Image (cartoon, rainbow, N blue to C red):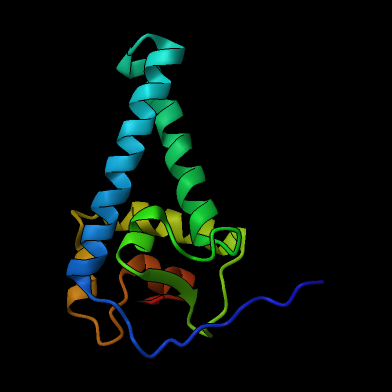
Length: 137
């Protein structure tokens, strides 16, 4: 059985850098989603919405977990990593919980995401729900 990697949790990343990484991720997801939607559904946005949601879920859960070493593609560009507050990598369950927390953070007029800018540990609601930090990779 492999031992999970652990990372330092001292250099936490703030709101602006995290937002830029997320914008890059959403750009990538939008591009991929558009191509897949065109191929499968002829560009029908209504039929493609469910597929786009699943692609986003799979993307974030995979890359935030130990399989993606806590780094989405946007996170890799900006040298960010998501880790548990203990410094260990996330399991698939942890990553899924963080994703659900992110949806909640977005639905509350982005208050849960903006929270990062004012929190002493630079955690949004989704980070608090899943016990995670975003740190320098």
